[in-house]
Length: 207
Length: 207
DNA sequence: TTCGGCCTTGGTCATATGGCCAAGGTATTT
DNA sequence: AAATACCTTGGCCATATGACCAAGGCCGAA
Image (cartoon, rainbow over all chains, first blue to last red; front, side, top):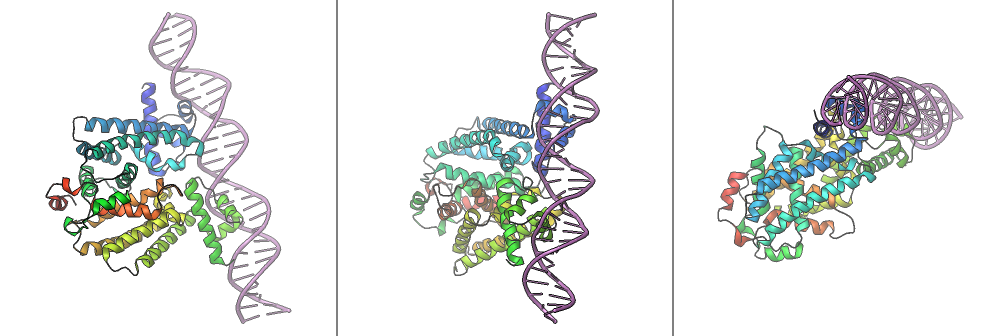
C-alpha cells in the first residue's frame, strides 16, 4: 500500500468511527486498529487526533464538490442543475463517505484553535452552493428573494438533517427523498388555491 | 436553595457547557464548578454524567412543549397555530435554554444503552409536532401531501439547523427568521408564474 | 550490493477522568 | 431537645488517553 492509500484508509476508518461514536469518544488507538496499524504508525502520519479530523473534513469537501460538479456537468438549466446537485449531495451524505456527515455534525468537537481548518473547508463548501443558487436565482424564475445566504441555510438545513433520520433499506431511497425535498423547496406546502395574492411582496419584505 | 433549584442549576450549567464544548469534552468537575458545588455533591444528585444529560434532555422537551403550547393557546386557525408554534420554537432554540440545542445535537454522544431515555424524549417531541401538522393538514388548504413525517423531517431540519448559524445581535431576530422560514415552507421559492400546472399531482406521487 | 530514506514497532509517560465514599455538618420534623 | 433525613466535604483510585520516541526493518535507487 502506498502512502496515500494508507492515509486514505486512516481517514476512512476514522470517519466511520467518528460518525458512529462521536469524535471525543473515539480513541486514536481505535482508529489505528481499524486501519490495521499500530498507534505509533498513525502518529507518524497524523501527529494529533485533531489533524486527522481536519484532514478528513478537507477531503470530504473536496470530494463532495468534485462529485456534485460531475453530476451537474451536462445539465444546462440552472434550476435543474440545482435539483440534480441536491440529489447528488443527498446521495453522498446518505450512502457515501462518512466524512461528510462528520464535517457537518462534529465540528463542535474541535478546540477553538483547530477550528480554522474546518471553517475554511465549510466556507469553501458554502461558497460552492451559493454559486449554484445565484445562477438559479438569475433565471428570474424564482421569487424576488433577496438573501441567498438565508435560502442556502434553510435548504442546507433540511437536506443535512436528513442524515439524522435516514435509515438504509427502509422506505425511501436518497433519490426519492431528494425529489420530494426539491418539490417542497420549490413549490411550498400550501395549495395554490389557498394562498394570499401578494406572496411575492411578502417575500420581498421577509427575505 | 432548595433541592429542585440546585438540580436546575446543575442542568442549566451542564447544558451551557455541553453546547459550548460538546458532551464528551465536558468534565463532571467543570459542571460542578460552574454550579458552585464540589464534584461529590454533583455525584449525590446525578450518579453519572449520562444521568445529567438525560435529565437535561427530558426537561428540555417538557419545557419546549409547554412553552409552545402556551404560545398557540389562543390561536384557533391550525395553520396559524403552526406558524406561531414554529416561531416560538425558534425563539426557544436560539435564545432560550441551551438544553434544547444539546438534545438536538449531542444525542450521538450517549452510549447505546443510555439512548433509551433520549429516544423517549425525542419521540415525545416529534409526536407533539405531528399533532400540529396533522391539524394543519386537515384544513384542506395544504397540498395533498401524504406523508406528514416527511414534512416534519424537512421542516424540523431547516428550523433546527438555524441554531448552527444564528448569531445573536447580528442581522435577523429569531422572529424575522421564523417569518421568512414559514413563507419558504408554505409558498416555496419558485414564482407562481413559472411553475408547471400539475404540481399537486407531483406531490401526490412524491410525498 | 550497498546506501539512505521511509515507515513500523512496541513500548513509555504524565495527565485527566468518571465514579466513588466515609465522615461530618445542617436543617427540618416530632 | 432529640432524632432523622438530607446534603456537603475533601479526597481516593483504577483506568484510559493523547502524545511521543528510540531503535530497527524494509525497499527502491544508485
